[in-house]
Amino acid sequence: MPDTLERVCFLLTLRPDRVDDYLAAHATVWPEMLDALRQAGWSNYSLFLRPEDGLVVGYLETDDFERAVSAMASTEVNARWQRSMAEYFQAPAGARPDTSMRRLTEYFHLD
Image (tube, rainbow, N blue to C red; front, side, top):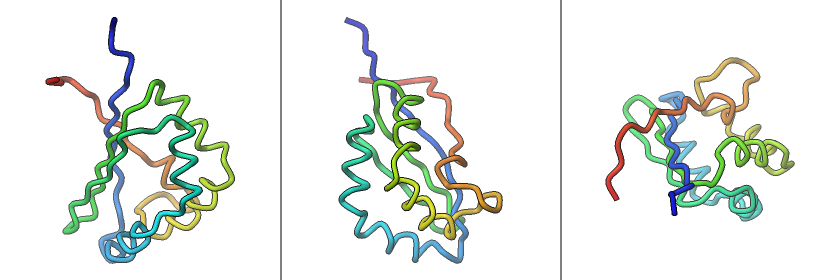
């Protein structure tokens, strides 16, 4: 049976002067946000940070990334979360952080 799980890696960029605030905000991610991510199909989701320049690397697994992103985009809790996170990111004015993700191409995987 072929593996239908998508492994997704993406980049975001924080404002270097807001790294500590961003990390503090993630110390207590809202339970309803965590539930929404799970219900939308996000699993094994991790965020990594290079604090010296604000580079955020995200990784997740899902059956269908486009569907998972769309499902999150339609939730009220995600809209609130994105508004609360916007001040931490280097993104075009008014852009939600989740629309600024730069997905990376997977070219090798070892099970």
